[in-house]
Length: 247
Image (cartoon, rainbow, N blue to C red):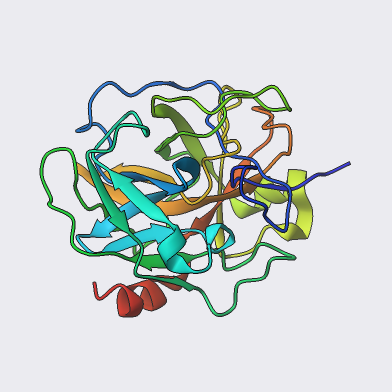
C-alpha cells in the first residue's frame, strides 16, 4: 500500500502524518557548507526547515505554516539548531493560494522576517527558474529524523546527503498520479528525507552557483530509502515566488 507522509515534526500537530529527517546523511561541520539552511522553531522545538532566498525572505513548504506567524522563530547561521547564530521572529507567512492539504500540491510558502546579517555562514540561495534533468545530483540538508518510525530522533547537528533527481514518469511508477508538475522527486536508494526536514532545501550546483530547486514536501511514512521523495519544484511557480519574495 502506498502511504504518504508530510515531513513536519510531530511535536506540532499537523493535519497529515509527518516525516522530517535525513536518513543516511552525515553531519554538517561548518555553517559555510549550506549557509542558506534555517531551522523553524516553536517554543524552542524544531519543526521544519527553510531556505534563505534574501535577507528578509525564507522559502518553505505550505504544510509547515504556523498561525500566528509570530509563533515561529527562524534560526540561521548554525549547524546546531539549539545554538542559534541569528534568530528572527516571523513577521508574516504566505502559503501558495492553490495549496491543497489533501493532495499536497502547490506546497510552497514564503516567510517574511526582519533582515538577517548576511555573512559566510548566513547566505541567500538563488531560486531555480528552470527544470533540471533526471539524474542531476542534488544536495539535501536539514535536521529531520535520522531514521523512520517512532524511535527516530531529531539530530542536534544538521545533516546532509547527496541524491539524484528523478523524472515525473519514474516517480509515478511508485506514487502514481499523486505526483504533479509542481513536484520534483529525487532518490538514490541510500538516503531519504524524514520528519523534520519539511520545507528545507533541495539544491543543485549549476556551474558553481547553488540553485534552490525545491522544498521538502512528502514521501514514504517510514522514510524508506528505496522510495523517491518529493519536493515542491520552485521553477513551476517561479513567477509567484519572484513576485511575493521581491526577487
